[in-house]
Each structure stands twice: as structure tokens, then as C-alpha cells.
Image (cartoon, rainbow, N blue to C red):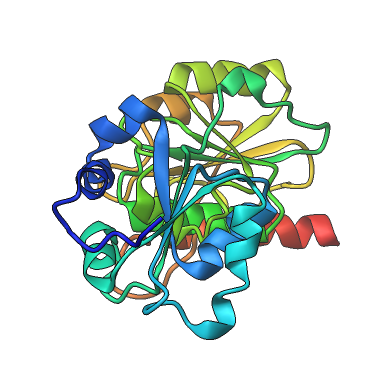
Length: 264
């Protein structure tokens, strides 16, 4: 098939429409942009339906990824640099963009183990922070990440990018807060909430058993539902002039402490 060189091509327009969450939800798909991200997604078992690539933008040493994608049965679509710029999210794209099923599964499909570590993110809408939480959770051995807010867009391509595609390699689910709390209770998982009103530092709380670490949005923190359900509340000690950290930083600190305790 000849390379697509016109930005007016109907397929190019259809791909560009996936910038809209409504369109992504309609087709049940998201975009994975970047050579490294796509490579990690393939390693996690993701089966893309299409790969859009621009040989001019892709570095020669990366071309081996083409065979790996082709072996999954994905359609390979070659495009000009101008077309790739039209569909890409990055300011300096590297020539790799795949269409793949959106991440996430029903909450009831999760099967937490007896010593599980779960990260709960409530109301975090900034793709960069949410993606960073996935990446950190995967790095520190969390078993699952649960989004406790219907507003969260797990399939946002910027979440995929910020997560370095770990949104595909860790168990991910989304559900309303009340359902998440009930789910954790059913599995006997202790709820540890990070909040400025916390009573202990992370190192003072036992995090080696089945534990859910709850992180809230930067502007509002966790809701009263989580504070009422908490078995423990933790606060991150700070000595500067600011009184809070963003969600990604707070999540990284508490996940690190949980990992430290478990490694011990």
C-alpha cells in the first residue's frame, strides 16, 4: 500500500478525532505514541490494531520494532512526516503511533492477593500526574491501580505517554468511590489515606500487609468518604513554605515507603 501523504485523507481525519475522549470511548481505543512506549506496551501483551509510522522520522536503529508490530497482525500504515505531525500528540514526534484497545478492566475482574499493594487515585484528572502514578506504582511493585472517579480518562494518550505505557502492564480499574471502598473491604485490604490532616508519617504506619494507599487530587485532596473509611491516615512531613505536594510526588513517597518496608 502506498504511503499516505495527504492530511485530508479520511483515515487521517478519523485518527485525529481520537483527540476527543468521547470518540475514544466510542471506539474503545487509545493511541500509544513513541518507540519506547510502544515497545513496552507490546511486552505487556498489548495487541495494536494499527501502526502508523513515518520512516523519515523514525531512527534507523528503531526499525526493528516494525517486525514485532507486524507479527501481532496489526495493519502497518506508512505516512509522510506532514501526516504524522497531524495525528501525533508530541511536539517532536519520533514517527511511531499505534492504535490499541483502551486500558482498564472492571473492578470485579481484579483479584488482589493476600499481601497485595493497591494504589487508589481519587479525582486525579491531570494526565501527567495520573500517568506518573502508574509509572511509579509499577516501579515499586504495586499489584493494581484503581481510579476512584468517573472523571478520570484512563485512555488519554497523554496518560499513556506519562506512564511510559505502564498503564498496560499493571492491573488497572476504575469505579465510583463507594464501590472501591466496598471492594477493598471485601478483600480485607487496609485503607491508608494520604492527607494533610494525617496523624502519622508514612514510616510510622505498617504497610506490609494487604494495603490500599489512597491519593487525592491536588486541589481538593481525598473526599470525606475516604477519610471516614480510613484505617490509617498519613501525612508527608515537610519543612518548607509550601503545605502540599502534587499527587504524583505524594504517591511516589508513600509507594517508596511501602516498598521499603516490604523489602525489609
